[in-house]
Length: 387
Image (tube, rainbow, N blue to C red; front, side, top):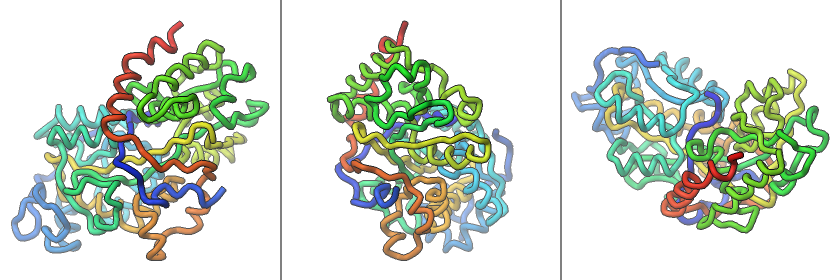
């Protein structure tokens, strides 16, 4: 996907200290009819692997279905390409990744509009505001992965309707071969030498990466989790200065030199630095000290998943050490970072490559704060960048 998934975050209280441990270092098809788990149980009602009679039975049920339908998972995002390839290799289950250029709202729309259809998404990967909304709408199935208890309480629904999977910081990516001096802070983005260079990963009214950029800009300009308007005003100033680039960032726009400065998640920008090195692009990454903002995304299962066993096996895989280290290999901090570090199962080499954070972000917006911020952005963004 063009890496502009509409994902916004809402968190309760304060996460555990190392949960975002970035400070340690510098199309749908048809399938066989599914539903029965081991012992004649309906896979759609299974709330844990125990309901299948164990992992072997879950794997057998998922293999019988033979397919997993996911949506809006770009291969460049948090190492999802490798995760999907490894899951297929491990279990022999085909993965259909529909609409990789879509948004979280597209995911929810697909869940609701395709209810009862084989082409409905089996699982979704949503920003917390969208995950909470989907849970309220009764769209998600309660399911607790084997390591559910190891996920910090502030990072999951107590009934297992959704749980954080990976996260990162808002960052500034820059093509050092096209920009004489790369910006390090939000304040830098107003400098005259950045004419037409400053781009976002999508539109903040729909895309969580862009929404996060506005939230971070708000924190850098006297705003707060209760007041995102200064972030909107800031990008209005970037536009007035002639620095705003309306092209939405994708790996292709970076490679073509169309978006030399990108405000995006740290795991995406860090991944681009490696991805494009052999192509002669010196992509530098900075986490702005004047607007430190982070968020996690969430996994959830469609209550009416057409491949319910495969959906549950996918979640078990993502929350295994292999899956969590897979996210880490994509420069994202996995939800089980602390637990795996304590157990000695964390990939230390991958953890050492996480970007340096000067000012860790620990207090996350509540659902109410995020809803209010989304409303403000929806009402005022277009006016701010008009003209």
